[in-house]
Image 1 (cartoon, rainbow, N blue to C red):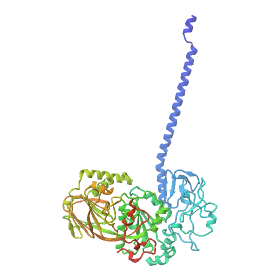
Image 2: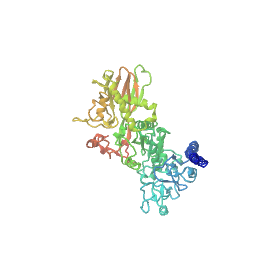
Image 3: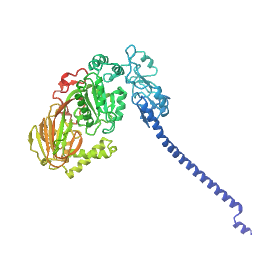
Image 4: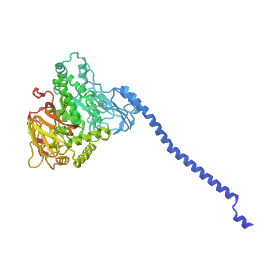
Amino acid sequence: KLEERREKPGLGAHCSLDMDGAVESREEWTLLLWTGFAVLVPVLITLWCSFQRPKRKVQLKDLFRKSKHGWHYTDLFNKPTYCCVCAQPILQGAFCDCCGVCADEQCIPRADITLACKEIMAPLRADGSFNHHWVRGNVPLASYCSVCKQQCGTQPKLCDYRCVWCQATVHDDCKMALSSEGQCDMGEFHSVIIPPQYLHQVNNLRRRHPDEYCKVLAVACGSVWSPLLVLANTRSGNNMGEVLLGEFRTRLNPVQVFDLSDITPAKALQLCTLLPPGGACVLVCGGDGTVGWVLDAIDAMKLKGQDQFIPRVTILPLGTGNDLSNSLGWGSGYAGEIPVEQLIRNIMEAELVKMDRWKVQVVSKGNYFRKPKVLSMNNYFSVGPDALMALNFHAHREKTPSFFSSRIINKAVYFLYGTKDCLVQECKDLDKRVELELDGEQVALPSLEGIIVCNVGYWGGGCRLWEGMGDEPYPPTRLDDGLLEVVGVFGSFHCAQIQVKLANPVRLGQAHTVRLVLKSSRMPMQVDGEPWAQGPCTITITHKTQALMLYHSAEQTDDEESSASEAEEPSGNRGNHASCAPGTLAKSSLPQ
């Protein structure tokens, strides 16, 4: 019996096992509940925030629309930033690209009421001076106090002040000493800023005669005053236009900066009629197409009898090709490598040159009683493989515009279409389809696939087409000689060889007038990167007018430094150029 009792387990053992199993089961359920809580709660909070965010965005958008500030919302500031209302550090919120005020999301309504933005029109003080407009905190990096010359913004808090007009920075303790000294002088770029008091006086004038602006108002701004207008295309190239608009609004009067997606160049250039005649300068931020758009608007001003207000034009290249910008010394593309301050200095030091503009008239065969198609040309006209690549690229971009947001992607797509044409050769036997006349004389064509008519020295995104390479380089082209350079290419592969300097084009000649007759079939054509497919027609290219442009000669625009000084000489004799400084523009420099 004792042995049987030893073999059978007791009741105590069974109870102990049941209790251990219950404890383990309870722990598993507890762990499961806490795990579910830890996972579900953040997900629910995220979903709730995602539902609330559109409501907040609608409220902020309505506030931004009614505000005098140029508010822009950001999810992450790119440097340590402090709220100008509560002085707390912030990661996301809104900033004004005109005056530089920053605010947390909860403080935006209060900042909009209590903190004033730049006034585009404001009267002078009783003593004729203009007050500083101070904004506290978030001063630029590496800025120094105007009083003690020590670095500002070194403390990890909202501290020190910056004037939104002259960009002077001062310490909190030094501000009183500076304020007692006098007025704001608009800083380094006072000669390109339209002062608020000028627009206030213009608004009060009843007579609107140009002589009154020049004699009465402009005298107060100084003899070297040359206001700079900025026209930016936010859709060009690598989409830097939005950033540049904010940079220029910070340093200039916001009324001088225009977004071409909101306003046309014709309306923006009407500001020139409120400025001294011949004193304004226009900076076009965009590609060659944007520059042509602005130059067409300037030609429209001439037709309205506003010749005396014609501005000088300079370029900040944001497009893909940028051949006109390259020819004028402003480079083949801008990606933020040069500060905006240096860009303004380069514009102030640039030289004035004239550039020929041409009229391209297309008369379709069989439609002689219809009004011909008329285009303006600044860079080049072409028929053949390069126009085919531009046409395919344009069609693809129209279908998916969001894909073409980078200059590198755009050039890669061009390369793919060029490679395809090397195999297909859609433009072969061009010499049998067209007739070419230069100044009335017919030119015998070799076996070509493309013809290019150039006005500027650069083509195809940075290639010196007419000068060529090798033992027999041709003399450089000029922008104001009234001549067009006509060349031919054997195909897409030949175009690629020319761009990498392994071959020269077929030089067909120079002429004042070019006439091209397309006898049969449809061929791709382009003018300054704007392509289309054209049937049988007659194309005539004649001189249209001259535009006043600014030439930047301080930087090389090509890797051949030995020939850069003479290859892009726009007017033959650089000593005859007029300076960019206001007041030095002679009557002989005005366009014909």
